[in-house]
Length: 171
Image (cartoon, one colour):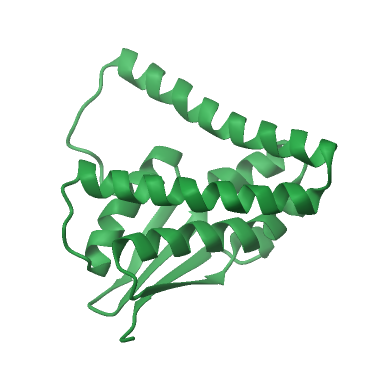
């Protein structure tokens, strides 16, 4: 589980954050389904990939700015990802962090939970195979172009947890 924030929020702030979080998830699903109706699942997925490439870059850069992160280490990437994971309510834990390797286990993914809730769970692993890989690859690249990402296991494909692996390579 991610560490609790030292910042305490009042009820109004919590309501506003929950409203924005739900809107964020809803708009992603709604435009995808509308694009799918208009064309096809494959075209909607390809467009989704393009959207997440851009959004991930914006999110990664914004976390670096908000947290005043200047270093390009795996630890810095993890610090930035904690913002994403907490904001989106992932249940994850750090399993490895050293100079060359960062591993995170995601036990519960809010996106997969939404796919289950909307009775589209059968599509979850197809989407994750494209979107999760692309999104986290972009995050890694924004923190350091020498960090490569691999999705070693996927919860939505039957694994107990997603296994996110970030490796610092010499290129």
